[in-house]
Length: 84
Image (tube, rainbow, N blue to C red; front, side, top):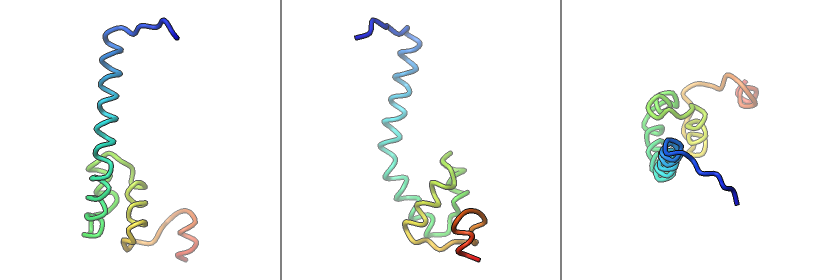
């Protein structure tokens, strides 16, 4: 066991970070469900990325899993080759 004792500022920082991670875990499923609904209603992956701070790829994966029709063909990667 370590004899390390963090200072008060470090404890506050780590505690704050832990709470943020717990909040993120609580919101993960509701955000995914809302994103699936919004993508089906016409929202773009970029719209949702701007609102959440998550990457467009996060929402692309949801869209693919939910079978949401693409608004444009893919421009990079394996799926681009398949679209051509």
